[in-house]
Length: 285
Image (cartoon, rainbow, N blue to C red):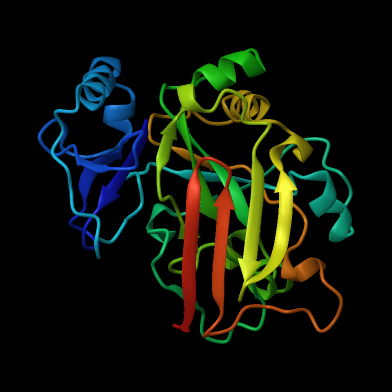
C-alpha cells in the first residue's frame, strides 16, 4: 500500500494512493498515519481490504498539498557514509561499524515544501536517501532477517545538510543536520510487502534539472536489515521511528572546487524507485 497524508501543514488527513493512481480518503477508517497504526496489523488489514473493495472515497488531488506520510515520529536515526562510492568521493575510510547521528522530528516537512537555507550558511548540501519506518518494537535483534521483519515500510527522504555547520564548527554532526525543513519526507510510505528487496532500489537527485546523484541501495555498506539489527543493540526502536540509511555519491561536498552548494532559488528534485518523487524550491531562512 502507498499511504500518505494530505492537506495544509498541521491539518493533514490520512489517505491512500490506490493501484490505479487514484487518491483515496482514509479518515473514515483511521485517525492518522503514525506508529500506533503501523503496529496495528488488524487496522492495516482493514485498510487493505477497503482499498481492494473500492469503497474508499475518492479525493480530488488537484491543488492538494502532500504532507509527510507519517506523523508523531519518535526519533530519526541517520547512518553516515553508508555507500561505498560516497565514502570514496569524500575521501573517508570505509566505516567498520555504522556511523550514527540524529535528526529531530521537527525537521520533517512534506516532499514539495520549501527548504530553507540557514542564515550564514555557505555549504548547504543535498542527499537523497532511502528512509526506513519501523513497525514493531526492536530490542537486541539477532539477525538482519529479524531487522527486516521489524520494518513497516519505506519512503523517499532528503537529508539536507549544512557542511560547514556539520564538520567545521566543532562537536557532533548534529548542528549541520537539524536546521528547520532539513528532512523532506515522502510522498508515500510504501508498506514493506511492496518492497521485496530494499537493496535493489535506485536513487536519483537533480539540482536545477541537472542529474547529480544516480546510485543504488545495492552499494550500501550496511544493508537495511543489518542497520536495524545493529541499532537495536544501542537503542530501542519503536513503531513510527525513522531511519535515514545514507546517500550515494554525487553530493556537492564531493565535487571539485568551487563546490556547487545550494542557494536560494535552486530547485532540487529526487526520487527512490517505487517510493515517489520530491521537488523543493530553496529560499533563505
